Structures are given as C-alpha cells and as structure tokens.
Length: 507
Image 1: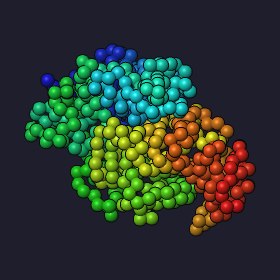
Image 2: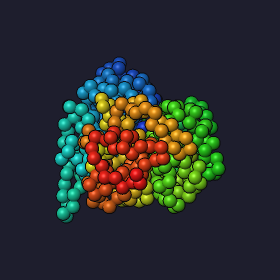
Image 3: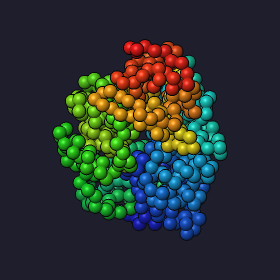
Image 4: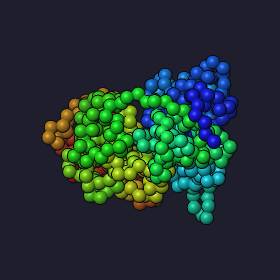
C-alpha cells in the first residue's frame, strides 16, 4: 500500500547498493526534488552509497548543480548505464576522469531490456548494435578505462542468426515523475511530456522486491480514468507531492491538454525556442544542408529527425509544404505533430499519440520508419559514421543506433569540416570563404555509431549531405553524387578528402 511522504522520507527508502532506474528523458520529466533530497541525505550522512543509476535517455537538468549532479559528483554512485548523457553537464566530465563506471548502450536497447526485466526475463535480444562500438567484438559499452563490466552486452547466435543480448542489473528502486496521484494511488501523466519507460520500470522493481517512489504535481480525490492511469497504485510505495512552479503557456503546448492545429505549430515552436534553445547562432551551412535534405522527403513518410543540423529539415519541410504530408516521430514515444528541440527535446507540439518508449523502439528497430535524418561527428571512407564520441568529449549514442539500424533511407546531415568553416549562399550558389580546421571525412572513424557494412547487408539507402556536396553509400564506400553550384569539385572537395572517392556527379 502506498504512503504519502515528504521527499526526505521517501529517499530514506533507498539503501546502500540499490540499483535505481530513472524515467527522465534528457532534461524533461525529471523528479528533480527527489534527486536533491537524495543529495541532501548523502551529503549529511554518506548514505545511500554504492548506487547504480540506469536511464534509457539520461536524467539531467542542463545544469551542473541540479538534479543528480551533486550526489554523483560527491561519490554516491558507483556505476551509470545510460543511452545519452547530454543533459548531465557535470557527470559527463567526471566520466572522462574515471570517477565511476559508465556505460553507453543504445537508448532503445535499454528500454527493451527494462521491459524484458518487467516480464521476468533477464535481458533482451536485438539486432541493433551489431558491428558498432557497443558490440563486444569491437569496443563494448564502457566509456572510460574502469568500465569493464562484460555482462551488459553479449554477442550471441540463435537459430543461426546474430544478435546482441542486453542485460541490466536487477533494478530495486524506481524514481518517477508523474502528474497526479488519485486516492487509490494511481498515477496519471496528463501534464507530462512523455511516459517513457515508467510502467516497465515500476513492474520490474516490484517484481524484484524493490521500492517505487513517484513525485507528482498534485494529489486528487477523484480516481483517474483507467486509460489515463500509467502506473496503477498497487505498484507504488511512496508518493511525494511537489507543486510545480508556474510555467509559460508554451510549455503547456507540449502536454496535449489543448489542440494545436498545423497552422499554429510554428508559432508555438518559436515561443518555445525563445525559452529552451541551448544555442542561438545563424548557421548558413546548416541552412544549406537542411534545405537540400528536405528534398528527400516524400508524402506519407514516417520520419525521425535528429537534433542539431537535422532540425533544419523540419523548417524546410514546412517551407516546401511537406510538413503536413509526413508524420514526424520522436524517440520518447511521440507520433505526429512537431517535435520540440533544445532543453525540451523529447516533447512534441500537437502530437497525435504519445505511447510507451519501448513501443516506439519496436517501430524503429523493425524498419517502421521510411526515412531518418541524423547528424554526425565524422564519416570514414567506408561510409561508417561516428555520432557519439568527439575528441575529449562524448554525449552518448542515444536513439541514433536504433533509428539508423533498419530505416530504408538514412540521411546524414553534417558539414564537410568544422571549427572555422565560413560559407556564403547566394540564391543557391555556394562559396567556401574559409575552411574549418577539423575535417569530418576521415580514413577511419574513432568509434562506429553506424555501420556501413551492416547497412549494405540490409539494403538501406544511405545519403551524406554537406554544405557543398552530397555523397551516397556505394559498394566500395563513399560515392560523390552531387556538387552544388559555385563549388569547385577538385579544389573544394576531392583535394580536401584524405582518401579517394568514386565520382558519379556532373563535373
């Protein structure tokens, strides 16, 4: 039977050595006050310690000193298993200092492993991850030099087919953020941006004899409609009421509490952008890439668009009149509408449906998308892409590996080089005014996020769109298929590549 508790009382349910599963998505839907109560207790008593934290999509707040950052920094956590660390500013730095074990698994594979644990299975089989960094035949999921747990990902052959087997430690504590708890303890998510893995996490924790702690905005007397209840009260141990701070109406547009017609998507997106963007820089290269990439869209496409430069595809799809002819999706479970970006990435303006994250990755893993648009840090001569590991930094692979694993058309959107690149675009005529210092096309990528070998075996079409040209994946690696007006193919492309490339473009 659940009990209403303060945050401090609820955190006392957590013991040394517990494995905590967190349902946040990057920086949204995070039980921040529970994290801060945990930090207060650890700072005062040194307990709970030796914790393991698991999250499909990360559990940060885009702030060095909020949410879990304090107790992670002071040493309460021995191990973190995450799909993405982007919103965890302090934690990302500490990982590279070997302060604790840290593992990066594809977001969807963590989600499916959580669901498997909820069903009494020790792990989940997947084709996702074969021939990329997480494959134990290559690097494995460990991020730093002390991360050597080889139980998380195993290469297996079943009925003659290759798989990776993803297995998580048994989770014993759930920390969840919901909207309302009714008088039966049922938890609804009406004002949340996503439900994520909430139900799977709670089912797994209860099966493992652990504790489910839920932070809600309010307590209500009237019971929720059954279809609105994500977590039934019988799975809940502690409910903590923390009234939310008032927020701008732009955030309310992400909850689905009122209908937003297509004609208003851009207005709401602009209001959100003013409050949530992490950068505000005009990038001509990104404009060129987004405009060209949007030409790959076809009516009735089911689409995923990544963060960064690929987000420009959405803008040009609207300009081209394609945005209302396609269905956009986002990893957190949203289908339809207009995915938000910046600090609220994972939320959706005007969604048609928001379902459990594991179901979204069922769609992605099985090739349910028609096309996806992803970014990249570097591409090699073979067509492999590194999208998760930069020089002296990392964010994590997130849903990238799942999304690109089987989608029929994969479009990578990235500049030819970076750090100082200056480009002019005069009505479609491109001039390279200054080259960047760091090339993005290399002999061998530092780490593989996308396997060209696997893509060819799957029969996928793979396109690499830059601000000056377009490559496609051919039988022997990259093939130059398009050069933009104003670009000198020899001077601006071929002589800048560290390898030879097949040319199949008008000269």
